Image 1 (cartoon, one colour):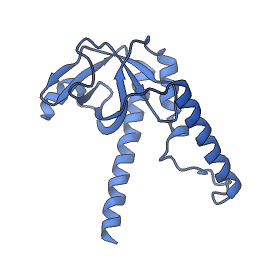
Image 2 (image 1 turned 90 degrees about the vertical axis):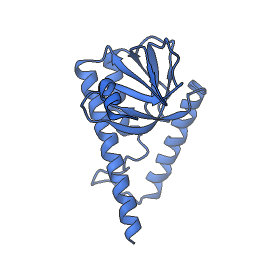
Image 3 (image 1 turned 90 degrees about the horizontal axis):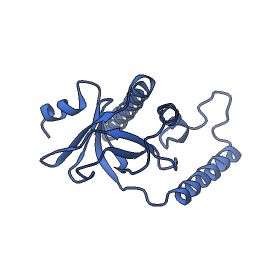
Length: 178
């Protein structure tokens, strides 16, 4: 995809490419304050987030690990029972201005998308979008109704995703050296 085409929709801001469960929505958009809270709470549900990061916690404690696994299972079961039919993950390039997806991900008249921020969160974040534009193998759209604290929260989320992507690439390079 031509970066100039993506720049038109994603802006000059930081962007990251990641697997994302996203699809069209008929639900009302998520209240901006709730959407901001959902995005900011992602670290609690993030699979890559190190558990027991507090210095006073015993990371090797079997009891704590067992409780964490039980909680993970419970959250997964609740998520599946509340919304079993989620869209399959697609490779998406995100910025605080918009999103680029594989062509055909969204219908032509789409004005809202459901974004499942984590496989453990049963509630999607429903965000407004402009009518998608398809160019080649990409479908691009800009966010609508996202401003202020919600826009900042999305920017921080993208930064965390970018930071995680960079860390994973470094680990692969380091593993290749061994």
